[in-house]
Picture: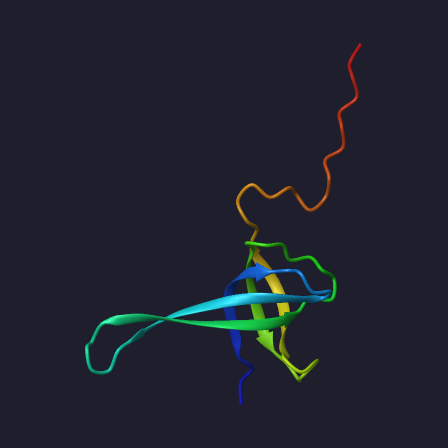
Amino acid sequence: MPIKERVGRVISTRREKTITVLVEQRVLHRRYRKYVRRRKKLHVHDADRQAQLGDLVRVSETRPLAKTVHWRLVEILQQRAGAAPATPAQPEEAQP
């Protein structure tokens, strides 16, 4: 059985080493033939605490790490708009 992967947006980083990711799918309604948005909140293990609020991330299914944590962070696809860079820029020295 292949490992499930999902892409979603980080909506909470309050817990230590755990983030909450909102995954959204568009599925066709059987009867009305109209696309409906299905949303699911996933609790994701982020050991390095690198994901920030609003980031677009890829997560992968893993063994249960806690009561509700069954996913792990694979990569950050896109940082939120207006986010500071991961490494602080070094100030340039003043030229005489």
